[in-house]
Length: 539
Image 1 (spheres, rainbow, N blue to C red):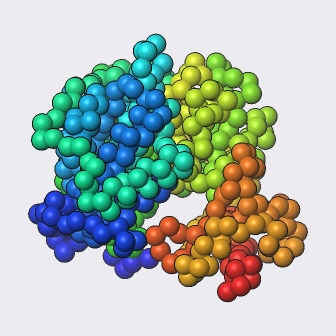
Image 2: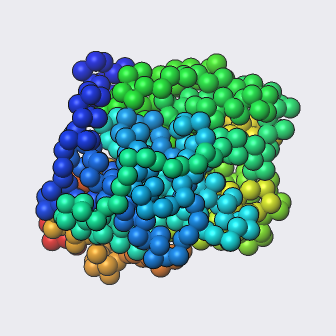
């Protein structure tokens, strides 16, 4: 934890926007250097122009690759495009629009040339493709999510509306790198752009009453504070307030691509993470002014929930409360609709699922795994420990297949309106029934070779048979829900678990751990987890 975590940013913390934007246009990547290649993680390609990792050359090549991929897949309809408030998002959108125009792709961009939250774009793709059109739409979201102001991000959402799977992203990344290696000679591009206007804001906000009980919130007079954290949700919260007549205050209406108003995150960087107590310090300071106070990241796919009695909720705690509430208050959902969670999310969700008589669908890290279930209604809720989730409409049909921080924030108000209790109070009640877990993620050093071995490690390579004094009941290298590789291992006992996964950006591996016994037991789990993993890696 940095000494300045949670304190206001100073001038020295701010990115030089002129240098950032100049680097976007001037620097040309060399894809023989790994750090300058196109690499799609769980949420698209991310990087900074200052590191020659997110530049005009990259975006032109990625867009050309997407054009070729969608043609190959038979995707012949419009491409929805939107950007967040990061400084690199606007020039990246312009680059993409020029390439899309030259390739003859019909593009739908925001009608007001405004910012577009990730969930609003996913919502638009789903709406178009279920409307009986003879062609098929897909989309591009330009965002690095909650990453620092120096970063940019570029993400492809295919016709299902959610994050592209690894087959698609691998093909796009490989093709883009080949194009860059050829000096972008294969990129078709023109100066003029031909995008049509689409009302993302109006379409999304007007449809919210079909997924959230807005009337209950209004009748109860819930006092809502919403902080967009300088992100794309700002005009959406303002429109939600005006359209539905809610007692809603946008507590910070400022948009600044340097994010000068933020408090620093745990590592001393500016990062718009609504689940971080350090990044949300200025928001939490106002918790007593509202019945609920919420935050979103730059592209609005994450949520933070602040209550007067509990402060900033741990994302795992809120997911558990949201799941129990929704499955009890959405009678039109299928009786067999499962509860989706990533395997590093809290196992209190497992206990809630069992009490509800619902099937738990546990998948690897990455929201893309929830997409098929959300599309066909077989999974009514999908959530990640990193404060990302989405769920079905009241009638059991798909709303978004990408994370939606706006509906998760609004759901907190519905919960208060209907139950008369805050989500924090409801979580306390869950712990009284199921126990109070202690959860933490820590990092451990690992070489690139060790990380590569960990990503392919089989559960059978774990030789230990006990963890923190308890018999090990499962050693998982594949997720129970869909048998997909987890890119690491998860070790489970009746009272605790840990999971180890390699970092995609640093020479460390991540240890997620949880104990239903207490803090000392958790620390024992963490110590033994490192010993178990190091032994399996031959460290």
